Image (cartoon, rainbow over all chains, first blue to last red; front, side):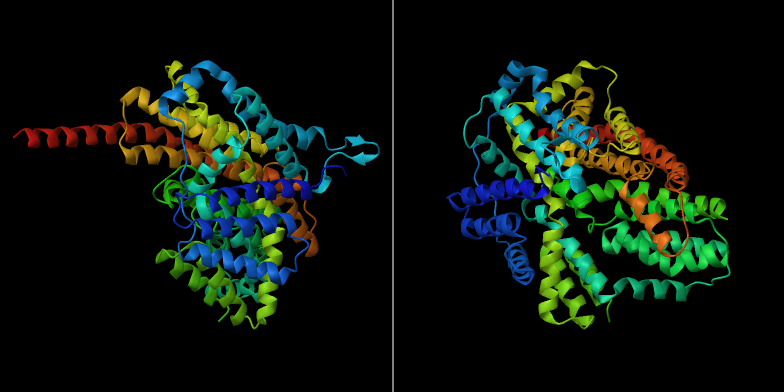
Length: 317
Length: 235
């Protein structure tokens, strides 16, 4: 293949390395060395992640967590455009401003659907196994070029602007990846099996409604702990869904899967462990309460989970 | 004992320690409780961190968004929504929820996202729609609108994507049952997802519809408490 996911990670690595350098040189940030070190280590994980021994990466990860944990990632000083400047520019550029922003989703979708089988000199243009991610990376580069041409901004300005955004997000940017490592350790230590044993030990198995209730609510709760319904599905389905609902009570596995997974998603809406959906957006939107997005979603999630319990009860048998 | 890590997570989040630190401590505790040697724990940390780098690729959108914001992207989004007289916060977000869910259901999950759509476009439009109606908003109300903009993205994509037969989750379910000797058609799994998908749209749509009233009430309350404060000062 010509463009592989590795190259996209290189671009991300160079970008984060520039952020780290800017942070290191920012006299306005009293913790500039630690902040720079945090982003610097992160950049190394993008650039050399597959070359460094996994155990050493593990040490790097822990160092990052310790820096962030003791408040070492600080806010830098940024020169922002004033309100008048922004309004003047928006009047000059008008709706063209939307074009680069919309290019990101449009090119991502076009790349995912349209460039799947495109070959150049006998090689696949994009990495087929990671089509959407590669398309996203390419889309961001094209959109950035378009934005630079449109706004006629020069040199390091795009990186400076992203540092303003990334400083606002701070350590939360790394949280989704960090939680994925916890999921891996849960799996290696067999946490899932213990939980599903507990659930199946706690319910009277001959009551159809209670079995359905335990499976759907269990999916939601276990997803809240793991932060990911994909991790909860195999465990809960092997522990409760398959033996009790499908085999014992003769339920339909297709209904079980569809509604079971959606019950897990109700859990995703309610947990800080699903950081990329709940915590990162709160940071991106400058919400003072990091749980603000979760609070907006909890009522929807609980009502929908109730609907799921009854849908499953009436449809699965 | 293996559940000790879960306890660490819950306690850590409740006591508001830094989540990165909580997660790392929970990971180490889980590993030790599960009798894994320490170098194995470090290796799992490293491997999983590298394998999941894709989760952080959203940062690549930041230079584009930052540059456009510097040049008035938010202001232009507000300008545009101001021209549509029928636009309210609730209606803007219901429309976005609808588009996001339908797009995800036909496999276009990339059409949206918090960094790409919500921060630069959807949240400013939802805020502007309320401002055009009520003038300056109280800070709490503004944050609530932003949080609901993010929630519309999540609900839309979650409950749309499983309707698409080639989506990873559908293939995961099929794969799981195949291992257990049961053959499922992806189309059946997708079809049985539709009732929940519709319920999700209705429930969240109604809440977004009610959001308009909530905004009006909060603006009124803050105006009257402001007025009282001024009266008090005058006396």
